[in-house]
Length: 221
Image (cartoon, rainbow, N blue to C red; front, side, top):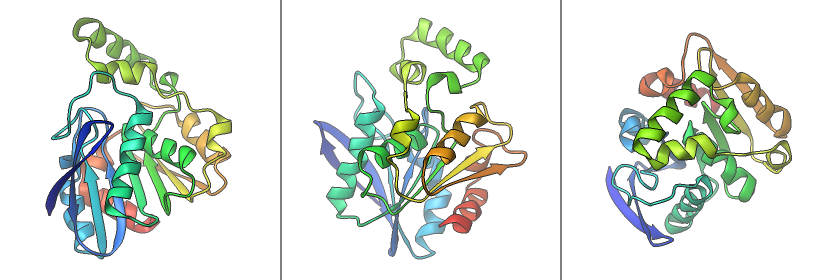
């Protein structure tokens, strides 16, 4: 596993690269970094995939920024694809990483080969009210920008979703904190969309268990 870096919009983005074969990009969620995929990276790299797992801006070993924006993160991923000259990668994104994946599909419809997202919301109201209240309290006392991001973004419309042309699978944990109807809206508007409801899983349980996530991905990709 090799740790590398590049610069986009004067921001250093750190990422790991491992394996050889079909390219796949892994995007972590808020309050995480690429180490959440440590076991998954090893499994995919030993199974015929070249794995790219960035620390998104402001997380892990990437540079901190004053103002987070999902569109900037999407542009960072595009820059990574150009940096490594990756052709039609699979992209898996969890939570904020999944939101980023949707935006990449919207903004750059010819960039990806396949898209898999999990635990996504299309706007802040897609997060359960009790969690939004908690986020407001945390933001009020800390002013942490990553909480501001979740409270104000994304704002993805059905019209935008219809721009996604790549085959897209949405994973939804049965006990997730995000609204199932927003995952259904993705599938309804993406031409090649599919929804998988995961019984007994919450927002992150099937992500933290890298073996479980590996099996899910292998059934899709």
